[in-house]
Structures are given as structure tokens and as C-alpha cells.
Length: 161
Image (cartoon, rainbow, N blue to C red; front, side, top):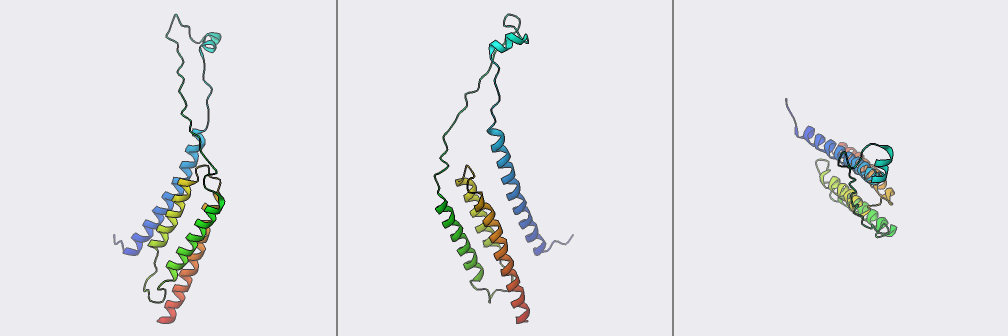
């Protein structure tokens, strides 16, 4: 089995995107299931339905003390996210355009790293997920800009040869 460098790069990109999508989907489902509160049975309900008596079996109710912490959802205003999105676009375009004519192969590593860093920042700072538009805008603009970069790179490479 002959695995070339291009095949390995494509596999790494696929695994990174798969891990990113899976990570966000499991984090959202874990957050949704953690927010559910199950009703607790107390001693009077045990005696009322006859499922257990104190003198026959050791009937007890375990109540977990729910540790609650107050989350400040307004900690990062929308202006911060707009600034971060603009900084992401600037870094992506600057990095792709810098030295475009002298490159012999398509660059992708730093662009993928910048995109993953922006998405990780959103996931960590926007705990309440109120700025969901940021996630989608990063993905869409990253794909669109990289598509135009790849198209320009391939057409200019054909002209050079």
C-alpha cells in the first residue's frame, strides 16, 4: 500500500474536520443533557406508593447537591465577536496573499490552524452560545476565501507553465 504525502495530508484534514464537527455536536448534546433536572423522590412518596417501608428495608433518598455557578453570558459583547471575525478574515487573506506568486504548492496548514483557533476561541468564550453566527461565519468565509485562493493558485500555476 503506497501512501503518498498528499494522501496523508488529505487524511489529516478529514480527521481534523471530523473531530471538529464531532466535538461541537457532543459538547452541545452534553450541555443539553446536563441542564435537565430529574425529580427526586422523597420519603413521603416512598411510603405513599408502598414501594418501600422504613422498618422492612433501609429506605433512603439521596439528594445530590447541585453545584451551580452563575455564568455571565454578556461577558463578551457582540462588538468583540465582530472584531475577532474581522481579525480572522484579515489574517486569512494576508497569509494566503503573502508570497502567492512564489509558492510552488498550495498552503493549507496555517490557514487550518487559524480557523481551528478561531472556532476553539468561540467554543471556550461563548459558553451560552449566543453568538452562533460567529461559528458559521468562520466556516463559510474560510471555505469561500480558500476556494478563491485555490482557484487563483491553480490558474496562475497553469499560466506559469
